Image (cartoon, rainbow, N blue to C red; front, side):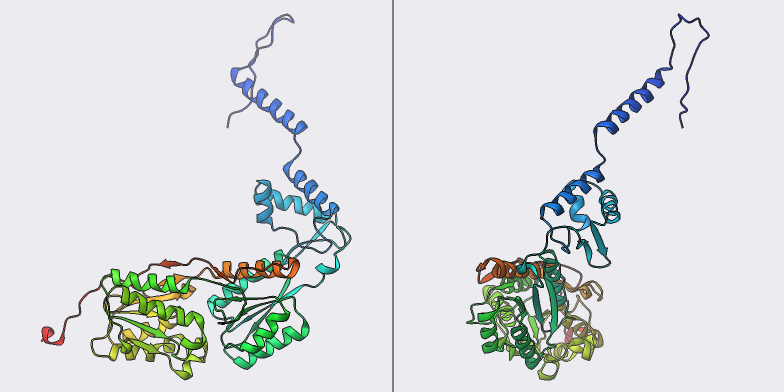
Length: 417
């Protein structure tokens, strides 16, 4: 490290004082720093001042959550550490306080009093299965948006039970929640209609035909069409399909849309539809959660049936990703390989897509964005009486991984002999 030093020479009082040339750099830098310190207020104090003014002027109510550290850092153009320093100063002053895992809030002794219309707003999220990744991620996005808008949210899992779904809807109606986000599995059509007439409601992923309830979802038709087209472009013409049950083609819109897109893609490419290439889980499994059976067993029988037909398919499309582990297990037990003998494509892009071997090609649904959008629509309906669009489509993406490959003709038994 360079040491600051001076070079002098012995001289009389009239002889000027000499500095080493490098000394000028340190002197100029020190003077500039001194001027900056005198004229510019530290950034964290600016943050404290602006936030305090907003609290005093009523932008934030007493007990209201303020923006996150990341949001404040982006707003002020500073590092997160600078924001933390500013928040610490405000905490010591008693203006704000933090709750671990929930955020930072204005102290009840500061800020304006909450208006009556801000007290205790609550929305309910009713989902067929919170353990399912798509349902869980929608809940994550919805809860984040609800917290930012000042709502609390309760989550209700129907566990694929129509009566349980109806019970939650009745509770929401009786307890007068402010809004409902519904991921319907069973229709409960009349009860949903009555609830939607009294309480703002938005459906996610699935809608209920004939009911004027806003729906936020991905484009199931386009997404499935793209998945099947990807297999056809790889050279596959014998393409199977595994779904939960044929009964859901009539009752669940997303299942019907994906199946119709599968058939339309085949037709557009001039490939004949074969009913024996479509396999269902069956009544017992279709009404159970994968965790109750085991992922390795869930779609095992359905895949085994496809492998057993004459001239079996070389590629299979899955209604959702949780069918993949069972399908992979059936292929391996049949001494076949993926993707050499069977290409697989899933739907949803769950976390398990990167955990199975080989990694699963899948359609990625923007689940968190769907949940956030649903809450924003509810907020507009509740506070301002807005009427959101009846259908909002958020684009999906086909994520290509190792479970698909170019079609490789199988060697027949006569050729092997």
